Image 1 (cartoon, chains in turn blue, brown):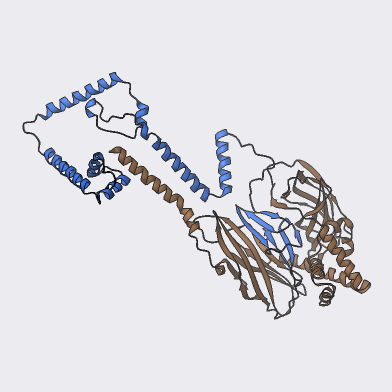
Image 2 (cartoon, chains in turn red, green; image 1 turned 90 degrees about the vertical axis):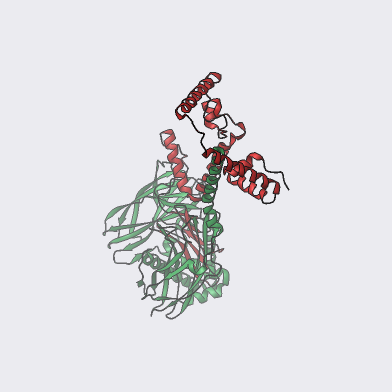
Length: 230
Length: 382
């Protein structure tokens, strides 16, 4: 059997305050550990007792006086806190490990710095950014990505981005590429290659509307394959 | 307590984002290869003179490659001439609307001699590549008949790809070249024909074809500010004369060619094509492109051809030095055509760069692969 479950975790398990993964781990341990199950039952019994006791109010209680005392205590505590140390706004804003146990020290929730967990938000944000980038890369056509990049560049610099003169112009329509092997039509990131398999063409002809490659088979038949641009 | 709640919420958010991001992966990993039959649709009109008999899709397949989708189609179609006339040429349009809406793949079959009732094969080899888009179906192609040319030069078909013009010009060139090679055989015997074939093969081997890119508008962000004047080759008997013209040239790109043309004939012209020859920095000349223009010209009338087209050599080391043009085809208003004669093509400047006709390529390959006897037999068929 592995190490027993900590008491704090058992208490949090009973109150339903454990995280999803920790709850599953504790439940798994309890299924095979008689000792921890007994401790768990003790926690449940105590919790039930506390609930019952909380339901029975003391007799002759002066509620108004009690409220005034509590308010005064809180004010004194806050003032003392201000005297002892300046407020650490930045720390508080980054503190995800809120303890909630120092009520009597004057602050309703003690937002002390918890350096052990400070990396968590940054790590989560980085992971989410990476996943979103990957999803974007998988889904967005490259031409759209390039266009978006140019738009962002223009937004940041307030002017048209400087581009190399020999860079291909943004495709505004079909483009025909003729090589010694085949004719290819490219449009919006898609492509259509017309060929005759592994057979090399006898000649390639390029035209403003139609381009073609000629193939002659062993039977002496000629076939021209190519593209026609409207 | 809040710490635990926050951790739990963050864990759930991360899981949700991960699951969302994995959707495209899942779409590709679990993509079921489409059946070959679903990749190809053949659409022939009811009154077609060419009927579809069968298709063999062989190794055709659709494959997810990374984030992209690739379709390789290797089909052999068997068609039959169901008309009463011999077929000389045929054009099939290969459409993939969802991939390339602005262009069409084409298979041309010139130099045919299909008797009525005979069947013949047409090979279809193409690759489609489309970036992966979740939710979209596998790209497919549709094959349509664009035109059929008969031995009497009559034509059938929707002609959306200017098939009538292409097939007719190729048939006229085929008739011209067969006549030429028959004359070589008659005058010089087997040696004469052999010599003509060797000359043709040698010229074809010497003719280089650099990689080029053709598109509307400028091909690069550079502003080709050099206005380069065209020189024009005189083609004997050409009914249209090109004189004066220029294009904007920058390094390996030429853009917006313009020509002045005059109709020298007594017949109205409706269409012409100009061959565009480019010389690079090392003195090599290429027939870079052919420029078609629908330009009605009455007898004796002059006009201007201006095209918003750019030509770019894919090898960036190529630098365009000079531009030369010549009139390669003229279509008259009555539907007849002018093509250069064999004598005109004997001009060394033209012979060096102009590709031989499809028929000359076919005949020379028959000689190359099957020998002189097979070539003579082929010439006797017509």
